[in-house]
Image 1: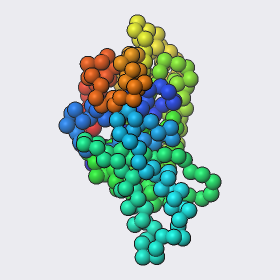
Image 2: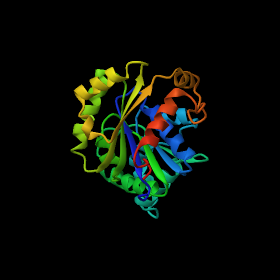
Image 3: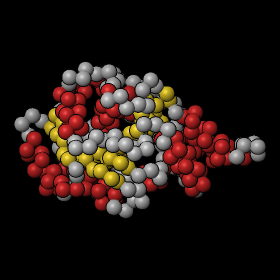
Length: 261
């Protein structure tokens, strides 16, 4: 296993990417791979809710605060050390995983110096965990901007819509431009109606080059997930026998190499 592998999930908003992120974290924990660092890199900040914990300080908030109070930081505390302390304070701790929330994007003005320091601190932080799972926004630019880590496994998530598949096509194109290496690519077609699997696969093949992916998984729509998210329940505690979770872990278990390898 590489030192602290990184798993990133990408896709259009609303396709169930955060649900798949929670399922991935649960799968790893059930495999005895912990502690896991969960990173919510989507500005909508939804991951904490499906993991059943509260969101604390965000990296976006730290960045803004650091710029606004820079002159108030004592001369005896280097800015690098101050930011490292703030990043540590932003980690919300749980039993088998910790959560770091990126929060809002940059505002007006130059953030280069602060971003570079934050990126260095985040890279050091992630290497203290067995594995890092990142719930990303739709694009990939922020991966290069916020971390220098290579992505061991990128999981592309789409629901059965042309918009979602076209978003992944754009993400793949952007992936050729970012500096980070993406070592493995997996495709998840989520919320597929019963009996429509082949039709959805054909639609995906018409938009995406499926040969770019190591494997393709089809996950059924699941009212149990809908009910849990409507009630605000943690997906880490939902009945493991539900169809969507069983399909997802069945897909992960079918891979020749584990996603944590």
